[in-house]
Image 1 (tube, helix red, strand yellow):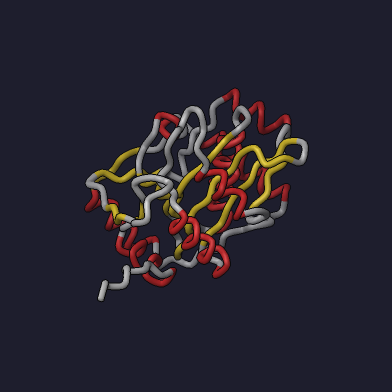
Image 2 (cartoon, helix red, strand yellow):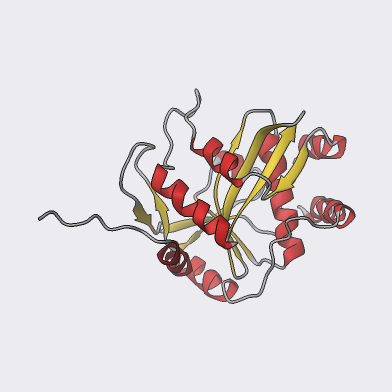
Length: 221
């Protein structure tokens, strides 16, 4: 008799995040999920977040419409899709299933960027206590994912979040002030922030949201 494959549940996934672990697959068609706990962890400070001048101009021009939790399924599917500049992805069907369950349970959230009614950018992640664990983002239009990231940070600040975990650092994230910290330091920040009470504001007051974005621009070094 063959052993039944071990299945990750949404409850186990939340427990793993509390411990600092996160899942990844080797490839889109992979059937297994691996747990990662890197020695250096990427975090994006919620205070001191840098908005490039050109991006601020785009934000003020309101070229994009930005929503949250309006189409989580399409957002994670777009993040999982292969693209010419990214022929492979770490989001397999199991990860897509798990995060869709977390969204239905109220733990996962997406931020979507729209252009002329079409979804052109966005991101998704997990909210647990005062921590938001950023998972992935995508863009099919210039600055679309960057606009989504700014709106995410503004929402997290309004909602009382303390920590934005980016897992790793990319050149893209470094432009906004993301840094790497040792595992021990991350574990300390995580243990404190995950016990905080925060609320992910899906539909914040537009004036308050924009005021927060302007404050972020003024705070940045």
